[in-house]
Structures are given as C-alpha cells and as structure tokens.
Length: 167
Image (cartoon, rainbow, N blue to C red; front, side):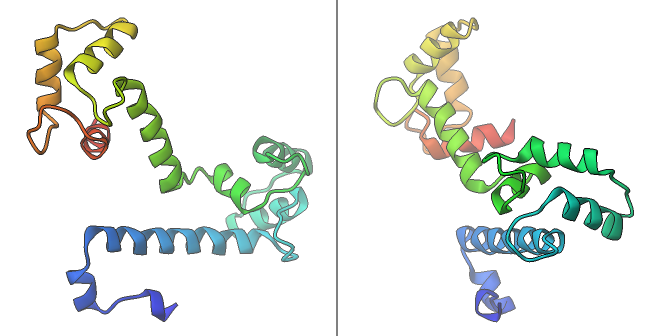
C-alpha cells in the first residue's frame, strides 16, 4: 500500500490526474474492504445469508432471509443468486469513473453529429430541435461560448464534460 501513497511534497506537486488516480485507488480499496466484510466465507461472492448476517453484525439492522434474497436479486446480474464485487458496487450505488465517462461520451455523441469530434453550433441546434427545444443558431453559439474554454467556437469532449459537471 505504501507504494501507492506519495509524500506530502509529491502530493502537492502531483497533477490533478495523479490526484484523481490516487482517489480512485483509495475508493476501490474501500469498496473491496467493505465487500470483504460481507463475504464471510471468502469465496468472492455474497450470499443472502452473508448479507443478512453482516447487516445485523455491522449495521445493527435486522434483515429477514426473504428481504436479503430480494436485495441480492435486485443486483444479481448473472442470475447465480449471489453478489460478486461488480454487482455489490452496483448495489451500494458507487458509480465508477469509467461508467460516468462512458455515459458522458454517449451524451456527447448525440450532440456531436457532424463527425468532427466536437459540438458545433449547428449540431447543437439540430439536436435541440430533435428534443423539442428549438433555438436559433446565434443562441446556440452563445450557449457554446459559455463553456468554450479555448475560444475555438465549438465544444470538445473535455469542455462538454466541464459543462455537464457544472449543471
């Protein structure tokens, strides 16, 4: 674990991406640790019985077997009646950065219809019209201008991401 941690001076000199990578590693380890507490027998899966036992032992909340089975069923993607780490992550509502990135890229792709790798005023106008929120081209230029960080008149994916995170 020490190899992943930086000294205070290294942390201060780190780029934002280094900081994000460290945070992601810590978050993933925390989820794995919690998963390990629920996975009583260490087989890499959480059964309804393990869920029930751990809820009582750690949270003090009693779950009957039927409720535990329903919770497992709600997140059990492969239908084996057990939760693996990925399914557990989905159950506790921890959305990975990769998932957020994928969703943002999909949304970006809807607006970026000209194959130029960016959202232009014209492509924004077209998409807004399809969504029933028609705007004039000049209004679309103004909308883009607010988040156009490099002043090129279009939104790159990174600028789109900033826009989506600020809303």
